[in-house]
Length: 591
Image 1: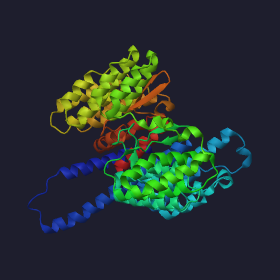
Image 2: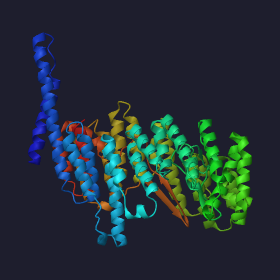
Image 3: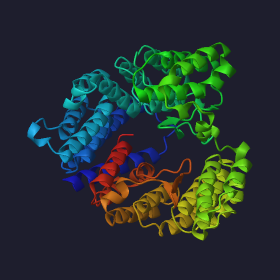
Image 4: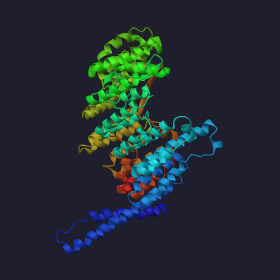
């Protein structure tokens, strides 16, 4: 039945392409045109119905999957795709998705830690399904969220749990529907300020900065209204307008944590660029309110003192009238905090490792007598400079490393970073030279995929194909779950040029998926971790525009040969890539 449906739709799609290729006669009469238009419309409607039936057939296949998380999320995605064409069927799919991840209420089954962990994971999946429902029926999603209660939430903090659920839903919506995401975020503020709010604000700022700024102000107001506001939440909100000299200021998600005395806090000693002054003033005013309130919690006492320490120079710069209230709040806390917390040397971790003081940092490192201790610090400094795209200074530091293996790892990651930076600035030939210096593997393959994408803007197919071939050659040396994803990315870049070879690469990617254990590609990380001694740093391995998934290749391949494409992905043995591929193919069919 499945193959027959595929064949039928393939024939229809072929007929559609053939019909589109027939040139219109200039001598057609208006009467013939008036007849042809309704017929063409009916034909398009018929093709659309068949595409919907095809996608519904895929949904039936998904319903038989055993992995609850994979099945529930995929069914919800299908429901979202089918909503406009068949709302009743889509609602039924949403119900199936919710049923698949329902949590058992039998108390005898939740006595063990394993059962509790399983129930927690199911609730997380359920919230992802509700986030998909929110895209189509926000009122229903809100009712489902309000009905979500657990014994733990009732026993401890149901209000915070409600806030968190709404923010998690908002996070799932923010990329595709920032307006609905904002609605759920505001709903969350009725129950408090979730620690996840900061992540949402930063993501929302990328889509709608004005909306994000308004939500930031509203969040501050809610925090100010909380008589027991958490100083940690205050510092996290501060990362929306401030940052750390230890991270790249252009990275909107980066947060640096430092240890001060007995507490770990966000470092907000540096300014983010282009932040409206009114946001800074609003934050400082709320901060003064929070740290001035009395509290018996020893941790909160220490956190509030540290907040005051970090914000005192901010107030001196932006709101001098707030300096004295901050100093007064800190003095009031001194009798109840550990004495070292009131000493200036305790705050040495806030001194930052920025470009301006790299030479000073190097002098401090070179004073260390132990070579391994020096190399640990060199690794940390190279990472900081690398994240700031300062590869020239990163190379100067790398040259001081004594350990041979660490030197080699740092040389490769610096070459990768240089190649990515060159691609960003349009220096494609220079990026190719940097890629040639890299050993076969993920980093080399990724840069060559970026080069292929950059060359696609021109018309030299030979150069594009050359870059794709070099990426594939590098990927052959990858032995984890990233290899089939690199192959898919290469197929996506090639799809515009060679449909036959693209199909071959798709089949090869399926074979590679089938050769891997599910766990190897279920938790893929596009990063290179370098570890030395007690220090580990993870360098991102991504190039803007390069997609590691089914969307790009299937969108093109399905338009050429829907039947063959569907047959290829149905050979996937693991449920996770199969579900992802079916979602991508369904999206292509309904586009």
